Image 1 (cartoon, helix red, strand yellow):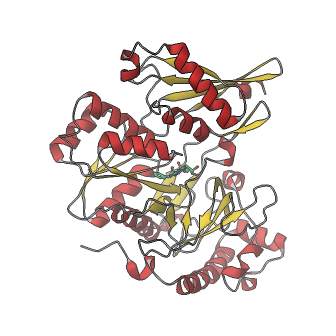
Image 2 (cartoon, rainbow, N blue to C red; image 1 turned 90 degrees about the vertical axis):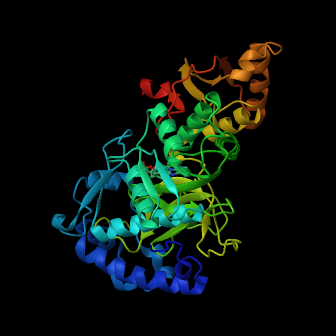
Length: 434
Ligand code: DLL
């Protein structure tokens, strides 16, 4: 069975890695210029010729592309191979506009699955494992990506897809699942169900690979505790391939970006200026090995920071911090920037679980923000602390985190709808009035 921990690539000295990137970038820019009219026009407009890019130091010369460009080019405008050479499409959910459809050749699929295989191995996976995949299957990349990675590692793969918690638990117990792959919000729900049914000692899970949505360190601890596992983060996006663009190793200290395939940059989202290592900004990716849908300098809208500090796992690939969310997840409420992850951190620190919803509205010209959070069953049983007392404590915690007043409603256990895929945390009713 192939070993998808690839030390010759994953621990390659940085200078060699960058030489490899430069070589691949030069070829890729020429390939894209020759095969995609949209890029040819963009580069001509920017006055950049393929031969101007001689290595990664020239990356900044290329124009950016963004999600609107992808939507405008829907469906075939960015295809760099004849449609006949493509074997698969995947797609974004399209909740915020027209869908983005990404195309893959067989080689693209192989590379993508290899990245997912590396992620599984970095979480301790081997061909002895039973890999329980309950990301959604279908157009969403989560299920197909981790499924392919699990095959490559040689795990016994359970293609569960999302939902039907009873069946998930039954298979987990009967087939001895050892690695769980799903969104962190669904992992938290499974953790809750395991606790309620007293199954913790009956399941054999040891690791989880969770991503596709932002999650906090507090949530990691909670999931690790309830499921008795180590919880690893995995990041990716449909446009760039899917999960596995980056992932955590055993150090759980940032996600290694698969730099032999993707070159990351951090830019100032307002000016587009490339920022030095260590600064927070918008993550931009250039794909240097993709054939069907090769994006150059794609603006992800995800905000994070990069570090090249040595990682004790031995991998040399640069690490990214957990994205704080997309730049478009940030809300401006009462004139202040508010991230759902800040709210989550306060709730979990005060012993709640990640079952909450944030409702933003506008009354007259004033913004309102209400956080509804469920009590845990233990809190509901403990009558010594009244609900208004709990609410007051949360109001104060949120005020010191956000700097604004927030209404809080502590509600009964199980009264907030559970997510099976990406959780919907924010309902911003102000959009209705625009
Ligand atoms: O969510 C791919 C994926 C599937 C990643 C399974 C990890 C696991 P999209 O549906 O295109 O693809 O959404 C991509 O989700 O730009 C981020 O905003 C967000 N995202 C993905 N992974 C993480 C993560 C998949 N680990 C968008 N932490 C990205 C925070 C994440 N946000």
